[in-house]
Image (cartoon, rainbow, N blue to C red):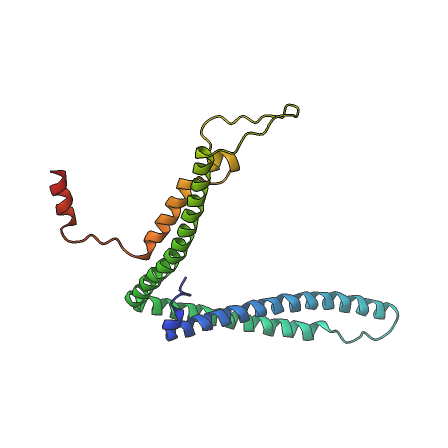
Length: 212
């Protein structure tokens, strides 16, 4: 959410880095706890089976391996709990910073939004110009065909299949794509994101006087 302005807020960037690092470490700690718990349970089953087999054979019971793994599992679980509390504290610190610097952050976000709007508008303006050039060439070709049609060729072949289109021919009903007006309208809207609309002084009065 704040990635566009994070570089301008060193303290927030540090807090975000701390939260991200603790989230990574906590996830790793949880995975280690689960792995050790699984190994400890397997070791317990193996120890019991070996002890039962040894006693039935009249031999001394082997040293169990499960206690050491259980101790490791308990230590890993404690480490994970500590990391969970560190993460909660870091998230709270970040929340306090965001609350205390709300106005500054909002101002930076508004500036970033305006800059992104200008970037989008510039790209949309370039695309709109390309689209208009494309349509001008298309219109010129259509006008040429209407004013100076190609000579009709003599039909010496058999009948061909015919496709019937009901209604006006448009890009949308012929190719399935968006209509020309829809594309131009969308791009014109994106271009308008680049700068706020400015009404020159007296413009409205002029319009009223003309209307009168």
